[in-house]
Image (cartoon, one colour):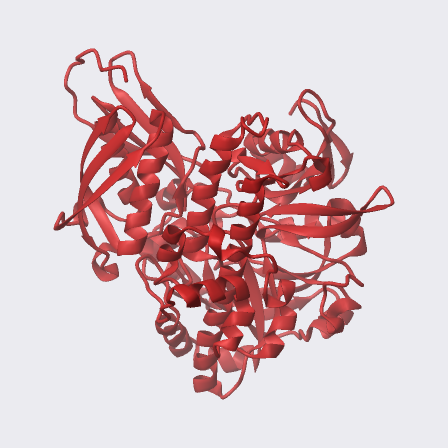
Length: 473
Length: 148
Protein backbone atom coordinates (compact mmCIF):
# COMPACT_ATOMS: atom_id res chain seq x y z
CA UNK A 1 0.00 0.00 0.00
CA UNK A 2 1.40 3.33 -1.09
CA UNK A 3 2.31 5.64 1.77
CA UNK A 4 2.12 2.93 4.42
CA UNK A 5 5.30 2.88 6.47
CA UNK A 6 6.39 0.52 9.18
CA UNK A 7 6.86 2.35 12.46
CA UNK A 8 7.51 -0.73 14.61
CA UNK A 9 6.73 -4.48 14.50
CA UNK A 10 3.13 -3.69 15.45
CA UNK A 11 2.53 -0.15 14.21
CA UNK A 12 2.11 1.14 10.65
CA UNK A 13 1.51 4.73 9.66
CA UNK A 14 0.32 6.83 6.76
CA UNK A 15 1.44 10.44 7.09
CA UNK A 16 -1.10 13.14 6.17
CA UNK A 17 -1.50 14.04 2.52
CA UNK A 18 -4.33 15.69 0.61
CA UNK A 19 -7.44 16.09 2.76
CA UNK A 20 -5.97 14.20 5.74
CA UNK A 21 -5.65 16.35 8.86
CA UNK A 22 -3.83 13.72 10.95
CA UNK A 23 -1.92 10.49 10.24
CA UNK A 24 -3.44 7.02 10.05
CA UNK A 25 -2.04 4.55 12.59
CA UNK A 26 -2.71 0.84 12.12
CA UNK A 27 -1.79 -1.63 14.84
CA UNK A 28 -0.98 -4.91 13.11
CA UNK A 29 1.66 -7.58 12.67
CA UNK A 30 3.32 -8.27 9.31
CA UNK A 31 0.83 -11.11 8.79
CA UNK A 32 -2.22 -9.00 9.68
CA UNK A 33 -1.11 -6.04 7.56
CA UNK A 34 -0.53 -8.36 4.60
CA UNK A 35 -4.14 -9.57 4.79
CA UNK A 36 -5.69 -6.22 5.62
CA UNK A 37 -8.47 -5.13 3.30
CA UNK A 38 -7.53 -2.08 1.17
CA UNK A 39 -10.91 -0.69 2.18
CA UNK A 40 -9.74 -0.45 5.81
CA UNK A 41 -6.90 1.81 4.77
CA UNK A 42 -9.14 3.86 2.49
CA UNK A 43 -11.70 4.28 5.28
CA UNK A 44 -9.06 5.20 7.89
CA UNK A 45 -7.70 7.84 5.49
CA UNK A 46 -11.22 9.24 5.12
CA UNK A 47 -11.62 9.40 8.91
CA UNK A 48 -8.27 11.21 9.15
CA UNK A 49 -9.81 14.00 7.04
CA UNK A 50 -12.84 14.66 9.27
CA UNK A 51 -13.06 18.07 10.98
CA UNK A 52 -11.69 18.37 14.50
CA UNK A 53 -9.93 14.99 14.60
CA UNK A 54 -7.16 14.79 17.20
CA UNK A 55 -4.03 12.63 17.22
CA UNK A 56 -4.62 10.12 14.46
CA UNK A 57 -7.23 7.87 12.87
CA UNK A 58 -6.51 4.49 14.43
CA UNK A 59 -7.20 0.95 13.24
CA UNK A 60 -7.02 -1.92 15.72
CA UNK A 61 -5.46 -5.31 14.89
CA UNK A 62 -8.88 -6.81 14.05
CA UNK A 63 -9.81 -3.98 11.65
CA UNK A 64 -11.98 -4.82 8.66
CA UNK A 65 -14.13 -3.03 6.10
CA UNK A 66 -16.95 -1.19 7.84
CA UNK A 67 -19.37 1.64 7.06
CA UNK A 68 -17.56 4.96 6.81
CA UNK A 69 -15.23 4.11 9.68
CA UNK A 70 -13.44 0.78 9.51
CA UNK A 71 -14.69 -1.76 12.04
CA UNK A 72 -11.88 -1.69 14.58
CA UNK A 73 -11.58 2.08 14.08
CA UNK A 74 -10.96 4.75 16.72
CA UNK A 75 -11.23 8.50 16.17
CA UNK A 76 -11.30 11.31 18.76
CA UNK A 77 -12.76 14.75 18.05
CA UNK A 78 -12.55 18.09 19.83
CA UNK A 79 -15.87 19.98 19.85
CA UNK A 80 -14.03 23.30 20.31
CA UNK A 81 -12.00 22.65 17.17
CA UNK A 82 -15.06 22.08 14.99
CA UNK A 83 -15.08 18.37 15.80
CA UNK A 84 -17.83 16.12 14.58
CA UNK A 85 -19.87 13.18 15.81
CA UNK A 86 -20.50 10.45 13.26
CA UNK A 87 -23.31 7.91 13.13
CA UNK A 88 -21.09 5.74 10.93
CA UNK A 89 -18.35 6.05 13.54
CA UNK A 90 -20.60 4.39 16.09
CA UNK A 91 -22.35 1.90 13.83
CA UNK A 92 -25.84 0.51 13.49
CA UNK A 93 -25.66 -1.68 16.56
CA UNK A 94 -25.10 1.11 19.07
CA UNK A 95 -23.28 -0.10 22.19
CA UNK A 96 -22.89 -3.66 21.01
CA UNK A 97 -20.70 -5.19 23.68
CA UNK A 98 -19.67 -8.10 25.85
CA UNK A 99 -20.21 -8.85 29.50
CA UNK A 100 -18.59 -11.70 31.37
CA UNK A 101 -19.80 -13.20 34.64
CA UNK A 102 -18.32 -15.57 37.20
CA UNK A 103 -20.43 -18.69 37.82
CA UNK A 104 -18.59 -19.80 40.97
CA UNK A 105 -18.43 -23.24 39.30
CA UNK A 106 -15.64 -25.14 37.64
CA UNK A 107 -15.59 -26.74 34.20
CA UNK A 108 -16.48 -30.22 35.57
CA UNK A 109 -19.68 -28.96 37.19
CA UNK A 110 -20.84 -27.51 33.87
CA UNK A 111 -19.79 -30.55 31.83
CA UNK A 112 -21.84 -32.81 34.12
CA UNK A 113 -25.04 -31.13 32.85
CA UNK A 114 -23.69 -29.57 29.65
CA UNK A 115 -26.51 -30.49 27.26
CA UNK A 116 -29.30 -29.88 29.74
CA UNK A 117 -27.81 -26.51 30.64
CA UNK A 118 -27.48 -25.59 26.96
CA UNK A 119 -31.14 -26.51 26.38
CA UNK A 120 -32.31 -24.54 29.42
CA UNK A 121 -30.39 -21.43 28.41
CA UNK A 122 -31.58 -21.78 24.82
CA UNK A 123 -35.21 -21.87 25.94
CA UNK A 124 -34.81 -19.11 28.53
CA UNK A 125 -33.02 -16.49 26.44
CA UNK A 126 -34.96 -15.37 23.34
CA UNK A 127 -32.61 -15.83 20.40
CA UNK A 128 -32.70 -15.56 16.61
CA UNK A 129 -34.88 -13.88 14.01
CA UNK A 130 -38.48 -13.29 15.07
CA UNK A 131 -37.87 -14.07 18.76
CA UNK A 132 -39.58 -11.79 21.26
CA UNK A 133 -38.88 -10.81 24.85
CA UNK A 134 -41.39 -11.08 27.69
CA UNK A 135 -41.10 -7.42 28.72
CA UNK A 136 -43.43 -4.85 27.17
CA UNK A 137 -42.80 -1.20 27.94
CA UNK A 138 -45.36 1.55 27.63
CA UNK A 139 -44.28 4.99 26.46
CA UNK A 140 -43.24 6.11 29.94
CA UNK A 141 -41.47 2.85 30.68
CA UNK A 142 -39.58 3.00 27.38
CA UNK A 143 -38.31 6.52 28.13
CA UNK A 144 -37.33 5.49 31.67
CA UNK A 145 -35.34 2.58 30.24
CA UNK A 146 -33.65 4.84 27.67
CA UNK A 147 -32.62 7.25 30.43
CA UNK A 148 -31.71 4.65 33.02
CA UNK A 149 -29.95 1.79 31.18
CA UNK A 150 -28.85 -1.10 33.37
CA UNK A 151 -29.64 1.02 36.44
CA UNK A 152 -33.27 1.09 35.25
CA UNK A 153 -33.18 -2.69 34.75
CA UNK A 154 -31.85 -3.26 38.28
CA UNK A 155 -34.61 -0.99 39.61
CA UNK A 156 -37.13 -3.18 37.79
CA UNK A 157 -35.74 -6.27 39.51
CA UNK A 158 -33.35 -7.49 36.82
CA UNK A 159 -30.16 -7.85 38.78
CA UNK A 160 -28.53 -6.31 41.81
CA UNK A 161 -27.26 -2.80 42.55
CA UNK A 162 -23.68 -4.11 42.89
CA UNK A 163 -23.77 -5.14 39.21
CA UNK A 164 -23.73 -1.49 38.21
CA UNK A 165 -20.21 -0.74 39.44
CA UNK A 166 -18.93 -3.35 36.99
CA UNK A 167 -20.51 -1.73 33.92
CA UNK A 168 -19.03 1.18 31.94
CA UNK A 169 -20.70 4.44 33.04
CA UNK A 170 -21.91 2.58 36.17
CA UNK A 171 -24.67 1.11 34.03
CA UNK A 172 -26.26 4.41 33.04
CA UNK A 173 -25.05 6.64 30.23
CA UNK A 174 -25.65 10.24 31.26
CA UNK A 175 -27.02 12.72 28.74
CA UNK A 176 -29.46 10.35 27.04
CA UNK A 177 -32.39 12.15 25.45
CA UNK A 178 -35.29 9.82 24.66
CA UNK A 179 -37.13 12.69 22.93
CA UNK A 180 -34.50 12.47 20.16
CA UNK A 181 -35.35 8.81 19.58
CA UNK A 182 -38.13 8.42 17.01
CA UNK A 183 -41.39 6.63 17.73
CA UNK A 184 -40.37 4.16 15.01
CA UNK A 185 -37.19 3.26 16.88
CA UNK A 186 -39.14 2.81 20.11
CA UNK A 187 -41.74 0.74 18.28
CA UNK A 188 -39.00 -1.48 16.85
CA UNK A 189 -37.79 -2.15 20.40
CA UNK A 190 -41.26 -3.00 21.73
CA UNK A 191 -40.84 -6.77 21.49
CA UNK A 192 -37.06 -6.93 21.68
CA UNK A 193 -36.16 -6.17 25.31
CA UNK A 194 -34.11 -9.04 26.66
CA UNK A 195 -33.46 -10.68 23.28
CA UNK A 196 -30.03 -11.76 22.09
CA UNK A 197 -30.44 -11.17 18.37
CA UNK A 198 -28.63 -13.12 15.67
CA UNK A 199 -25.46 -13.08 13.56
CA UNK A 200 -22.35 -12.93 15.70
CA UNK A 201 -24.27 -12.42 18.95
CA UNK A 202 -24.14 -15.20 21.51
CA UNK A 203 -24.37 -16.38 25.07
CA UNK A 204 -21.55 -18.74 25.98
CA UNK A 205 -20.50 -20.73 29.00
CA UNK A 206 -16.71 -20.84 28.89
CA UNK A 207 -13.83 -22.29 30.88
CA UNK A 208 -10.64 -20.43 31.78
CA UNK A 209 -7.91 -22.43 30.05
CA UNK A 210 -4.88 -20.23 30.42
CA UNK A 211 -3.70 -17.46 32.72
CA UNK A 212 -1.09 -15.04 31.39
CA UNK A 213 -0.86 -12.66 34.32
CA UNK A 214 -1.47 -14.32 37.69
CA UNK A 215 -1.61 -11.09 39.66
CA UNK A 216 -4.21 -9.37 37.47
CA UNK A 217 -6.14 -12.63 37.08
CA UNK A 218 -6.37 -12.83 40.87
CA UNK A 219 -7.64 -9.25 40.99
CA UNK A 220 -10.27 -10.19 38.37
CA UNK A 221 -11.11 -13.36 40.36
CA UNK A 222 -10.05 -15.71 37.54
CA UNK A 223 -8.58 -19.18 38.07
CA UNK A 224 -7.81 -22.01 35.67
CA UNK A 225 -10.90 -24.16 35.00
CA UNK A 226 -13.32 -21.53 36.30
CA UNK A 227 -16.60 -21.58 34.37
CA UNK A 228 -17.67 -18.14 33.12
CA UNK A 229 -20.70 -16.83 31.23
CA UNK A 230 -20.21 -14.32 28.40
CA UNK A 231 -22.99 -12.42 26.64
CA UNK A 232 -22.42 -10.58 23.36
CA UNK A 233 -25.24 -8.39 22.05
CA UNK A 234 -26.27 -4.76 21.62
CA UNK A 235 -29.11 -2.29 21.44
CA UNK A 236 -31.31 -4.45 19.20
CA UNK A 237 -33.91 -2.87 16.93
CA UNK A 238 -33.85 0.50 18.68
CA UNK A 239 -30.15 1.05 18.06
CA UNK A 240 -30.42 -0.09 14.46
CA UNK A 241 -33.26 2.30 13.80
CA UNK A 242 -31.43 5.24 15.43
CA UNK A 243 -28.38 4.41 13.33
CA UNK A 244 -30.40 4.23 10.12
CA UNK A 245 -32.36 7.44 10.71
CA UNK A 246 -29.46 9.62 11.85
CA UNK A 247 -27.13 8.37 9.13
CA UNK A 248 -29.58 9.74 6.59
CA UNK A 249 -30.17 12.98 8.46
CA UNK A 250 -26.42 13.56 8.79
CA UNK A 251 -25.74 12.69 5.13
CA UNK A 252 -28.44 15.10 3.95
CA UNK A 253 -27.29 17.90 6.31
CA UNK A 254 -23.53 17.53 5.64
CA UNK A 255 -23.35 20.20 2.87
CA UNK A 256 -25.23 22.64 5.11
CA UNK A 257 -22.57 22.08 7.77
CA UNK A 258 -19.84 22.62 5.19
CA UNK A 259 -18.73 19.00 5.42
CA UNK A 260 -17.58 17.27 2.27
CA UNK A 261 -18.20 13.53 2.63
CA UNK A 262 -15.92 11.29 0.55
CA UNK A 263 -18.26 8.44 1.51
CA UNK A 264 -21.90 8.91 2.51
CA UNK A 265 -21.47 6.39 5.32
CA UNK A 266 -19.07 8.83 6.98
CA UNK A 267 -22.13 10.98 7.59
CA UNK A 268 -21.48 13.25 10.55
CA UNK A 269 -22.48 16.56 12.09
CA UNK A 270 -20.54 19.11 14.14
CA UNK A 271 -20.78 18.23 17.83
CA UNK A 272 -21.87 21.81 18.47
CA UNK A 273 -24.73 21.66 15.96
CA UNK A 274 -28.36 20.93 16.73
CA UNK A 275 -28.18 17.68 14.76
CA UNK A 276 -24.94 16.63 16.47
CA UNK A 277 -26.52 17.19 19.89
CA UNK A 278 -29.71 15.38 18.84
CA UNK A 279 -27.68 12.38 17.70
CA UNK A 280 -25.63 12.34 20.90
CA UNK A 281 -28.88 12.34 22.93
CA UNK A 282 -30.37 9.53 20.85
CA UNK A 283 -27.13 7.52 20.69
CA UNK A 284 -26.74 7.71 24.48
CA UNK A 285 -30.32 6.45 24.81
CA UNK A 286 -29.24 3.59 22.50
CA UNK A 287 -26.31 2.89 24.84
CA UNK A 288 -28.73 2.65 27.76
CA UNK A 289 -30.95 0.31 25.76
CA UNK A 290 -28.01 -2.04 25.16
CA UNK A 291 -26.93 -1.90 28.82
CA UNK A 292 -30.51 -2.66 29.93
CA UNK A 293 -30.72 -5.48 27.41
CA UNK A 294 -27.54 -7.19 28.59
CA UNK A 295 -28.75 -6.74 32.17
CA UNK A 296 -32.08 -8.46 31.42
CA UNK A 297 -30.34 -11.34 29.60
CA UNK A 298 -28.06 -11.68 32.64
CA UNK A 299 -31.18 -11.99 34.79
CA UNK A 300 -32.53 -14.75 32.53
CA UNK A 301 -29.21 -16.62 32.70
CA UNK A 302 -29.06 -16.18 36.48
CA UNK A 303 -32.45 -17.86 36.85
CA UNK A 304 -31.17 -20.89 34.93
CA UNK A 305 -27.96 -21.14 36.98
CA UNK A 306 -29.92 -20.80 40.19
CA UNK A 307 -32.23 -23.60 39.11
CA UNK A 308 -29.38 -25.89 38.06
CA UNK A 309 -26.76 -25.19 40.69
CA UNK A 310 -28.29 -22.89 43.30
CA UNK A 311 -25.50 -20.45 42.45
CA UNK A 312 -25.46 -16.82 41.43
CA UNK A 313 -23.60 -15.13 38.59
CA UNK A 314 -21.27 -12.34 39.62
CA UNK A 315 -20.50 -9.70 37.03
CA UNK A 316 -16.80 -9.36 36.18
CA UNK A 317 -17.30 -6.49 33.74
CA UNK A 318 -19.40 -5.17 30.85
CA UNK A 319 -17.70 -3.46 27.89
CA UNK A 320 -19.19 -1.68 24.89
CA UNK A 321 -17.48 -1.62 21.51
CA UNK A 322 -19.71 0.62 19.33
CA UNK A 323 -19.87 4.01 21.04
CA UNK A 324 -18.93 7.66 21.05
CA UNK A 325 -18.08 8.98 24.51
CA UNK A 326 -16.84 12.27 25.91
CA UNK A 327 -13.60 11.49 27.74
CA UNK A 328 -10.64 13.40 29.11
CA UNK A 329 -7.31 12.52 27.53
CA UNK A 330 -3.86 14.00 27.75
CA UNK A 331 -2.64 15.07 24.30
CA UNK A 332 0.84 16.55 24.00
CA UNK A 333 0.86 17.20 27.73
CA UNK A 334 -2.49 18.99 27.70
CA UNK A 335 -5.77 17.68 29.15
CA UNK A 336 -8.49 17.74 26.52
CA UNK A 337 -12.15 16.78 26.45
CA UNK A 338 -12.60 14.55 23.41
CA UNK A 339 -15.47 12.70 21.78
CA UNK A 340 -13.91 9.29 21.26
CA UNK A 341 -15.56 7.09 18.63
CA UNK A 342 -14.88 3.41 19.03
CA UNK A 343 -16.37 1.44 16.17
CA UNK A 344 -15.67 -2.23 16.81
CA UNK A 345 -13.06 -1.22 19.36
CA UNK A 346 -13.11 -1.74 23.12
CA UNK A 347 -12.47 0.94 25.70
CA UNK A 348 -9.34 -0.17 27.57
CA UNK A 349 -8.61 2.23 30.43
CA UNK A 350 -5.34 1.77 32.25
CA UNK A 351 -4.64 1.57 35.99
CA UNK A 352 -5.69 4.52 38.10
CA UNK A 353 -8.39 5.78 35.75
CA UNK A 354 -11.10 7.52 37.81
CA UNK A 355 -13.92 5.94 35.78
CA UNK A 356 -12.96 2.44 36.95
CA UNK A 357 -14.65 0.92 40.01
CA UNK A 358 -12.51 1.35 43.16
CA UNK A 359 -11.70 -2.36 43.45
CA UNK A 360 -10.34 -2.49 39.88
CA UNK A 361 -8.77 0.95 39.68
CA UNK A 362 -5.39 -0.26 40.86
CA UNK A 363 -5.06 -2.89 38.10
CA UNK A 364 -6.91 -1.43 35.11
CA UNK A 365 -10.05 -2.17 33.16
CA UNK A 366 -11.02 -5.71 32.14
CA UNK A 367 -11.08 -5.74 28.33
CA UNK A 368 -13.36 -8.50 27.07
CA UNK A 369 -12.59 -9.85 23.61
CA UNK A 370 -15.18 -12.18 22.13
CA UNK A 371 -14.07 -15.06 19.97
CA UNK A 372 -16.16 -17.35 17.83
CA UNK A 373 -18.07 -20.36 19.04
CA UNK A 374 -15.20 -22.71 18.22
CA UNK A 375 -12.24 -20.66 19.32
CA UNK A 376 -11.18 -18.75 22.36
CA UNK A 377 -12.26 -15.51 23.98
CA UNK A 378 -9.76 -13.41 25.89
CA UNK A 379 -9.76 -11.19 28.92
CA UNK A 380 -7.18 -8.42 28.70
CA UNK A 381 -6.40 -5.49 30.94
CA UNK A 382 -6.03 -1.85 29.97
CA UNK A 383 -2.57 -0.31 30.26
CA UNK A 384 -1.09 3.11 30.86
CA UNK A 385 0.68 2.81 27.50
CA UNK A 386 -2.66 2.13 25.78
CA UNK A 387 -3.98 5.44 27.14
CA UNK A 388 -1.22 7.17 25.17
CA UNK A 389 -1.34 4.97 22.07
CA UNK A 390 -4.99 5.16 21.03
CA UNK A 391 -7.01 6.99 23.69
CA UNK A 392 -7.32 3.86 25.84
CA UNK A 393 -8.68 1.54 23.15
CA UNK A 394 -8.07 -2.04 22.08
CA UNK A 395 -9.44 -4.59 19.61
CA UNK A 396 -12.92 -6.09 20.02
CA UNK A 397 -12.87 -9.56 18.53
CA UNK A 398 -11.53 -11.73 15.80
CA UNK A 399 -13.01 -9.87 12.84
CA UNK A 400 -14.33 -11.72 9.82
CA UNK A 401 -11.88 -13.23 7.35
CA UNK A 402 -14.52 -14.66 4.99
CA UNK A 403 -17.84 -13.27 3.85
CA UNK A 404 -21.06 -15.00 4.87
CA UNK A 405 -21.45 -16.41 1.37
CA UNK A 406 -17.93 -17.76 1.27
CA UNK A 407 -18.59 -19.37 4.67
CA UNK A 408 -21.78 -21.11 3.54
CA UNK A 409 -20.01 -22.36 0.42
CA UNK A 410 -17.32 -23.92 2.58
CA UNK A 411 -19.31 -25.26 5.55
CA UNK A 412 -22.75 -26.64 6.35
CA UNK A 413 -24.40 -25.71 9.62
CA UNK A 414 -25.05 -29.26 10.74
CA UNK A 415 -21.42 -30.20 10.06
CA UNK A 416 -20.22 -27.16 12.02
CA UNK A 417 -22.38 -28.21 14.95
CA UNK A 418 -21.13 -31.84 14.74
CA UNK A 419 -17.51 -30.78 14.47
CA UNK A 420 -17.85 -28.56 17.54
CA UNK A 421 -19.65 -31.37 19.40
CA UNK A 422 -16.72 -33.69 18.63
CA UNK A 423 -14.51 -31.12 20.38
CA UNK A 424 -16.84 -31.07 23.37
CA UNK A 425 -18.61 -27.79 22.54
CA UNK A 426 -22.41 -27.90 22.58
CA UNK A 427 -24.11 -25.39 20.28
CA UNK A 428 -27.79 -24.49 20.23
CA UNK A 429 -29.16 -22.29 17.44
CA UNK A 430 -32.44 -21.93 15.56
CA UNK A 431 -30.62 -21.79 12.22
CA UNK A 432 -28.22 -24.25 10.57
CA UNK A 433 -27.32 -21.71 7.89
CA UNK A 434 -26.69 -19.11 10.58
CA UNK A 435 -24.17 -21.52 12.14
CA UNK A 436 -22.42 -22.03 8.81
CA UNK A 437 -22.17 -18.26 8.29
CA UNK A 438 -20.63 -17.94 11.74
CA UNK A 439 -18.31 -20.97 11.39
CA UNK A 440 -15.11 -20.42 13.41
CA UNK A 441 -13.02 -20.67 10.23
CA UNK A 442 -14.78 -17.61 8.80
CA UNK A 443 -13.00 -15.43 11.35
CA UNK A 444 -9.43 -14.24 11.73
CA UNK A 445 -7.29 -15.91 14.34
CA UNK A 446 -8.36 -14.15 17.53
CA UNK A 447 -5.20 -15.34 19.30
CA UNK A 448 -3.05 -13.46 16.78
CA UNK A 449 -5.23 -10.37 17.14
CA UNK A 450 -4.91 -10.21 20.95
CA UNK A 451 -1.21 -11.05 20.82
CA UNK A 452 -0.64 -8.09 18.50
CA UNK A 453 -2.78 -5.88 20.76
CA UNK A 454 -0.51 -6.90 23.64
CA UNK A 455 2.74 -6.44 21.72
CA UNK A 456 1.58 -3.04 20.55
CA UNK A 457 0.92 -2.10 24.18
CA UNK A 458 -2.82 -1.44 23.71
CA UNK A 459 -3.79 -3.95 26.41
CA UNK A 460 -2.23 -6.97 28.12
CA UNK A 461 -3.50 -10.55 28.09
CA UNK A 462 -4.81 -11.85 31.40
CA UNK A 463 -6.71 -15.05 30.58
CA UNK A 464 -7.91 -17.22 27.74
CA UNK A 465 -11.40 -18.72 27.81
CA UNK A 466 -12.69 -21.58 25.68
CA UNK A 467 -16.36 -22.32 25.03
CA UNK A 468 -18.16 -25.23 26.67
CA UNK A 469 -21.53 -24.35 25.25
CA UNK A 470 -22.82 -21.65 22.96
CA UNK A 471 -26.30 -20.23 22.37
CA UNK A 472 -26.22 -18.61 18.96
CA UNK A 473 -28.84 -16.49 17.22
CA UNK B 1 -36.84 10.15 -14.22
CA UNK B 2 -35.49 8.84 -17.49
CA UNK B 3 -37.57 6.04 -18.89
CA UNK B 4 -36.02 2.86 -20.22
CA UNK B 5 -35.56 2.87 -24.03
CA UNK B 6 -37.94 -0.09 -24.41
CA UNK B 7 -35.34 -2.82 -24.03
CA UNK B 8 -35.92 -6.43 -24.89
CA UNK B 9 -38.04 -7.90 -22.08
CA UNK B 10 -35.89 -10.13 -19.88
CA UNK B 11 -36.47 -12.02 -16.67
CA UNK B 12 -35.88 -9.85 -13.60
CA UNK B 13 -33.27 -11.24 -11.27
CA UNK B 14 -31.52 -10.77 -7.96
CA UNK B 15 -28.23 -11.80 -6.44
CA UNK B 16 -26.06 -11.27 -3.41
CA UNK B 17 -22.60 -9.78 -3.68
CA UNK B 18 -19.65 -10.10 -1.34
CA UNK B 19 -18.80 -7.83 1.54
CA UNK B 20 -16.32 -9.07 4.13
CA UNK B 21 -18.41 -8.49 7.26
CA UNK B 22 -21.85 -8.25 5.75
CA UNK B 23 -23.58 -8.88 2.45
CA UNK B 24 -24.77 -6.95 -0.60
CA UNK B 25 -28.17 -7.16 -2.31
CA UNK B 26 -28.68 -6.51 -6.00
CA UNK B 27 -31.84 -6.46 -8.09
CA UNK B 28 -32.06 -6.19 -11.87
CA UNK B 29 -35.16 -5.39 -13.91
CA UNK B 30 -36.64 -3.44 -16.78
CA UNK B 31 -37.50 -0.49 -14.53
CA UNK B 32 -36.24 0.90 -11.23
CA UNK B 33 -39.40 -0.48 -9.60
CA UNK B 34 -38.66 -3.96 -10.88
CA UNK B 35 -35.00 -3.73 -9.78
CA UNK B 36 -36.11 -2.52 -6.32
CA UNK B 37 -38.56 -5.43 -6.02
CA UNK B 38 -35.85 -7.91 -6.96
CA UNK B 39 -33.44 -6.41 -4.44
CA UNK B 40 -36.16 -6.86 -1.80
CA UNK B 41 -36.32 -10.52 -2.73
CA UNK B 42 -32.52 -10.69 -2.31
CA UNK B 43 -33.00 -9.16 1.15
CA UNK B 44 -35.46 -11.90 2.12
CA UNK B 45 -33.01 -14.47 0.76
CA UNK B 46 -30.37 -13.29 3.28
CA UNK B 47 -32.72 -14.45 5.99
CA UNK B 48 -34.31 -17.55 4.49
CA UNK B 49 -35.34 -19.30 1.27
CA UNK B 50 -37.89 -16.88 -0.28
CA UNK B 51 -39.77 -19.77 -1.90
CA UNK B 52 -40.65 -20.94 1.62
CA UNK B 53 -42.42 -17.65 2.39
CA UNK B 54 -46.11 -17.83 1.50
CA UNK B 55 -47.63 -14.54 0.24
CA UNK B 56 -50.59 -14.74 2.65
CA UNK B 57 -50.86 -11.24 4.15
CA UNK B 58 -50.49 -7.90 2.41
CA UNK B 59 -49.04 -4.66 3.74
CA UNK B 60 -48.39 -1.30 2.12
CA UNK B 61 -45.21 0.82 2.18
CA UNK B 62 -44.64 4.28 0.75
CA UNK B 63 -41.43 6.37 0.70
CA UNK B 64 -40.39 9.77 -0.67
CA UNK B 65 -36.84 10.75 -1.57
CA UNK B 66 -35.31 13.25 -3.94
CA UNK B 67 -33.10 10.74 -5.76
CA UNK B 68 -33.35 7.09 -6.75
CA UNK B 69 -30.38 5.97 -4.65
CA UNK B 70 -31.74 7.48 -1.43
CA UNK B 71 -35.15 6.09 -2.37
CA UNK B 72 -33.65 2.61 -2.76
CA UNK B 73 -32.04 2.66 0.71
CA UNK B 74 -35.24 4.11 2.17
CA UNK B 75 -37.28 1.35 0.58
CA UNK B 76 -35.07 -1.40 1.98
CA UNK B 77 -35.02 0.25 5.42
CA UNK B 78 -38.81 0.57 5.41
CA UNK B 79 -39.00 -3.10 4.51
CA UNK B 80 -36.52 -4.05 7.28
CA UNK B 81 -38.57 -1.98 9.74
CA UNK B 82 -41.80 -3.77 8.86
CA UNK B 83 -40.10 -7.16 9.00
CA UNK B 84 -38.80 -6.33 12.49
CA UNK B 85 -41.92 -4.76 13.98
CA UNK B 86 -44.44 -7.16 12.44
CA UNK B 87 -42.22 -10.23 12.74
CA UNK B 88 -42.92 -11.03 9.09
CA UNK B 89 -41.06 -12.23 6.01
CA UNK B 90 -42.05 -11.12 2.51
CA UNK B 91 -41.83 -12.87 -0.84
CA UNK B 92 -43.96 -10.88 -3.27
CA UNK B 93 -43.50 -7.22 -4.10
CA UNK B 94 -45.50 -4.97 -6.34
CA UNK B 95 -43.90 -1.52 -6.67
CA UNK B 96 -44.73 1.71 -8.40
CA UNK B 97 -42.29 4.64 -8.57
CA UNK B 98 -43.65 8.01 -9.66
CA UNK B 99 -40.91 10.62 -9.62
CA UNK B 100 -39.66 10.75 -6.03
CA UNK B 101 -42.46 8.64 -4.61
CA UNK B 102 -42.48 4.89 -4.12
CA UNK B 103 -45.63 2.92 -3.39
CA UNK B 104 -45.40 -0.79 -2.70
CA UNK B 105 -47.70 -3.63 -1.87
CA UNK B 106 -45.95 -6.55 -0.19
CA UNK B 107 -47.16 -10.04 0.58
CA UNK B 108 -45.72 -12.40 3.12
CA UNK B 109 -46.37 -14.20 6.40
CA UNK B 110 -45.29 -14.17 10.06
CA UNK B 111 -41.86 -15.71 10.78
CA UNK B 112 -42.05 -19.34 11.87
CA UNK B 113 -38.52 -20.31 12.97
CA UNK B 114 -39.20 -24.05 12.71
CA UNK B 115 -40.31 -23.71 9.09
CA UNK B 116 -38.34 -20.75 7.74
CA UNK B 117 -35.06 -21.50 9.60
CA UNK B 118 -34.12 -17.80 9.52
CA UNK B 119 -30.32 -17.51 9.41
CA UNK B 120 -29.78 -13.92 10.44
CA UNK B 121 -31.69 -10.69 10.98
CA UNK B 122 -30.92 -7.64 8.90
CA UNK B 123 -30.13 -4.48 10.89
CA UNK B 124 -30.25 -1.86 8.16
CA UNK B 125 -29.53 -0.99 4.54
CA UNK B 126 -26.41 1.14 4.06
CA UNK B 127 -24.94 3.60 1.56
CA UNK B 128 -21.99 1.28 1.01
CA UNK B 129 -21.64 0.12 -2.62
CA UNK B 130 -24.94 1.92 -3.25
CA UNK B 131 -25.95 2.47 -6.84
CA UNK B 132 -29.11 2.60 -8.93
CA UNK B 133 -28.16 2.69 -12.59
CA UNK B 134 -29.55 2.03 -16.00
CA UNK B 135 -27.23 -0.01 -18.16
CA UNK B 136 -26.59 0.37 -21.84
CA UNK B 137 -28.96 -2.51 -22.53
CA UNK B 138 -31.69 -0.48 -20.86
CA UNK B 139 -31.95 -2.63 -17.78
CA UNK B 140 -31.88 -1.16 -14.29
CA UNK B 141 -29.65 -2.41 -11.50
CA UNK B 142 -30.12 -1.42 -7.82
CA UNK B 143 -27.61 -2.50 -5.19
CA UNK B 144 -26.19 -1.78 -1.75
CA UNK B 145 -24.62 -3.51 1.24
CA UNK B 146 -26.89 -4.36 4.16
CA UNK B 147 -25.73 -4.63 7.76
CA UNK B 148 -26.49 -8.01 9.34
